[in-house]
Amino acid sequence: KVDNVLVKNITVLWRDGRSQESREIKLARLEAKAAAAGRIALSFAATLAGQAVSGSGQVGAAELLAAAQPYPVNLDLQAAGAKIKVAGSVAKPLEGAGLDLKLEVAGQDLKALGAVLGVELPLGGPYALETGLKGSPAKLALDGLALKLAGSDLAGSLKLDLSGPRPGVAGKLAANLIDLTPLLPKS
Image (cartoon, rainbow, N blue to C red):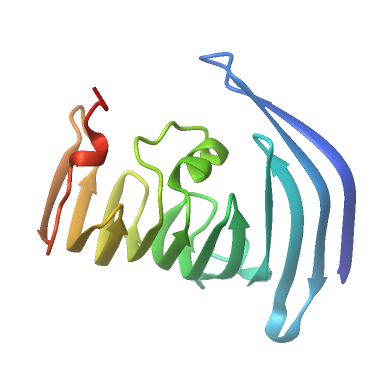
């Protein structure tokens, strides 16, 4: 049994074996402590793509290896001015399957968040996303989806199926306003 783990000043270099692209993560601090009800209290501070990333919350302990109980997750993260909250459970955490999570993301500059994630996003400006995530990354359902971005809004549900040779998307969405002007070339 380990009640307290503290890791400081670690640099991790991740290299994609196929593309040879690499990313560096500088972990200033990671602390994990035993908490009530068999949970683990986590907190960390790191730098990813030149942006500060930090977070805290609680996750399960014994549930990670036990197939009988879903793995609880309750985390608050901050990255590139975004506040991210993930709460719920994962039935099969080692397989990334059985997601039953609520995701909330809000911030002032979407492009800055894209830099942390390693993707170029076409829009800047304030954004907010709330949704439930169910299933697995290959077959994901987004329920109670509410997105606000660059003056536009979108709400409803989506099902994404990335398991076959062609991706599939199905859902019902409604919007009060969809403004594509920010996506158009300035010229």
